[in-house]
Image (cartoon, rainbow, N blue to C red):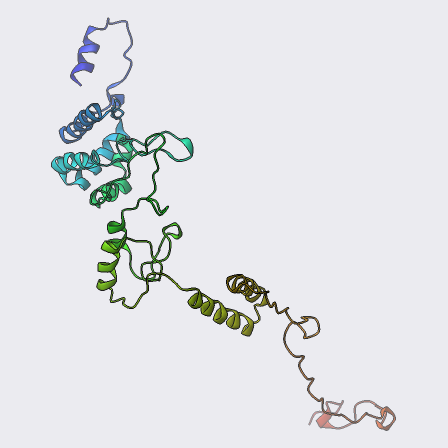
Length: 293
């Protein structure tokens, strides 16, 4: 406001003002301005994009973010937190050849980002081996071909029969799980899972396939049953015994035809036996013409 008044005072009387008093942008509150300055301080230190515009939209977002982060102290602490994240610092390669992601002010102030930063979503790899950018000619996989994964953190979030990425192999409660024993054994003990063998045998797999084949055939899903039969035959190194679906047209769409119900027989009416209609009979009960009493 002071700069606007000074600029107005330096103008000649004949020069029109660029903005009226109502059009001038109000100054941000001290809290919002401080948060804006803190962001630029971290941006300059960590080579993020510095914020230059503090318009009404950013002022509103900054005010809400500072409150949700726990004040200016929480705002600064959470900024320090994301500096320990490889993803936020741009050290994780982008997908499909895109540039790596780096933190920016509008992203940091989004409500969804506030929740994720507070819940350590971007710092979930700190306890385990962090995902580093692979150097040229190096391999980003473990000796058994499995990618490096933060197993401890994954198992802390995972519950039996919950969501499990197929790329991570069998589930922790199933045979053949690839999670290292130092993380897998405590997890199984915590959830009371015992007697799980290290590797699934071919016999167990064959038993599962055979049971599934019988179940599919019982409910009439012959295509699924034949698909599993082919898989079972390959596993047992034998020719597949495929069972074709019954003739649907012959069975009436798979259901027996309904037996028609017998209809009661009604004797035919002889039209000639009906006496001819001679009109309305006379009398007071038939609505005929008669004299009133």
